[in-house]
Length: 348
Length: 217
Ligand SMILES: Nc1ncnc2c1ncn2[C@@H]1O[C@H](COP(=O)(O)OP(=O)(O)OP(=O)(O)O)[C@@H](O)[C@H]1O
Ligand SMILES: [Mg+2]
Image 1 (cartoon, each protein chain N blue to C red):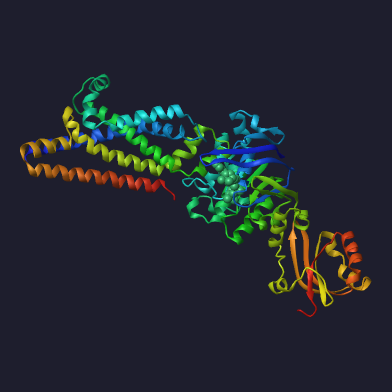
Image 2 (image 1 turned 180 degrees about the horizontal axis):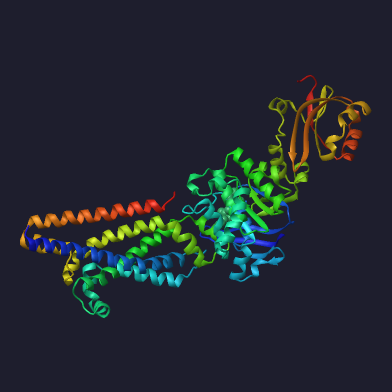
């Protein structure tokens, strides 16, 4: 649905040349929610703005629904932009227009009749839960309601693609959840393809199918969201995942952990299981078949894209010699296992 | 106050109101588009045109830097061309308008510049053409600011219109100068001043009221 090929963006300013984007290649499949994550200044906004040419890439192609939009004339580009909705961190609603009139704006731009506008706007008010607020002005709304108006407005011209530039970054956690829910809803109901950018892993975790990690204008990593959380490859991704899944060990363990084994130490292992593996009674298997005794120190269950993701830190009380077989067995069942280090027996 | 005096008073008041409203209306008519063009020709997301911008800005600043009393006299041929005469109240409207257009245009430009860049961007992302951006987004969103600009322009015109006496335009300012300054009739001068203050207050009050009414911030 969206494909960027060899996109580069360079800014020339008084302070010098900034390579905001280099060698950007990625594809967003129809109907998926594609998340781009990165630190402040990574180039996320530049990237998403290249998709509807609010920012023109210095070089490269931007394909939307099969056509390279960098080649379009101004007029063609305007009509293509009706196919690409966009919402912003600061909502960008027109303060002198009511909720209804704001949602009607893109339709007025296309030139719809009053009746047709009403037929389109009313269901959107309903979808976004704004029927009662129809005649209010943006200043009378909460942040979450404003973003709903912006979403309804972006959907008015029945776009194929929705771009979200930090859509939840100025909202509180609860409102964030409801807005993400709404995005997921319209993704399913309307089959809308969503490209969103964020600096929050929670957003990725909550609704994304695919993740792209951006740093200093370059793509560091891109993968399916489950793979991203279970098998992050880059150092940056590993750190993000670790923090996001609260995989940090309790401080008391961090102080005791040693990199090498000795006579009076037990191994600390982390087990990560997801999807169908969560149904596998693997702890029983380790204990009964391989004689490995485990002591669970920390456990955490996350839901990512309708999948259960379990993370468990355990101390191996006995049977360490069978660990290679255990690793073998776990990996066969798609369970990740990692030896974190060693702690003294009875340390806890 | 004698009957003759009272008639003169009414006449002068009417002349001031007539000059201010007529030149104000023309200033808005021409200054609004000029202000819009000044703004959008500078803005890369709408219709950037550096040459046009530089030329219009130069003309605008040029006219603004001419003292009004000189403008009044300098454009006499032009005034005659338009109104058929170079003296009288109607004739005074021409220089007042010429002086007010660039003044108001700059106020419009600044009101438009105050519209958040994000709104223009949102319009662009919705596929708005430059004209649509101006008509559907920029001007409506800047309307409270533009109304404030009209208020300021009208009040400035009340001041300028006092000089219209120089071309026989009459008005309250002229009355104050003729009776108060030249004949030492302090009472009349005070009365005109009070009336002028009242006029300015009225314009300000109406302007503020309207600006508040159209603003929903
Ligand atoms: N118009 C511009 N002129 C010059 N440099 C720019 C411009 N826009 C962005 N940049 C630079 O490009 C880089 C990427 O900026 P961008 O806004 O895309 O980052 P971001 O990932 O969205 O950051 P944030 O999370 O803070 O919004 C930054 O170094 C920024 O300074
Ligand atoms: Mg940004």
